[in-house]
Length: 120
Image 1 (cartoon, rainbow, N blue to C red):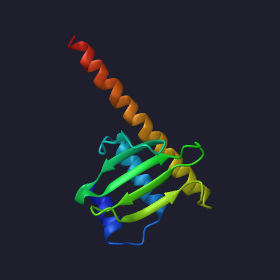
Image 2 (cartoon, helix red, strand yellow):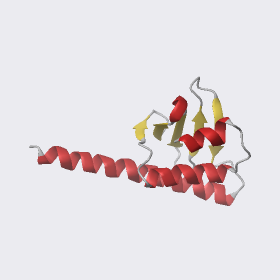
Image 3 (cartoon, rainbow, N blue to C red):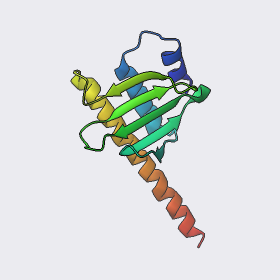
Image 4 (spheres, rainbow, N blue to C red):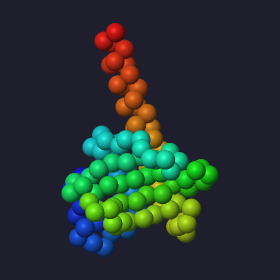
């Protein structure tokens, strides 16, 4: 997703809500292929261009979602925690992104299972 690279790496003045919403839109459009990963609660990951990695875990207590974007070297470029932000719109955007990603991964698994059962 080239736009994320432009927003984050060139350090353009961008509202975090815009980044979260662009990730959500790209997920809905099928442009991002998220995968379930990690031991930190339920976590999803996607690799963007230039090997930037976006992770979106739900904290084990289940009361917050964390979004982290790291560069190829693992240096955090953006870290947002819905449990620690004061902006209600950003908090809602983070939660909506998590639900969108969770549902997209689940739909992909169902689709792959249906294809596999057709071959039996």
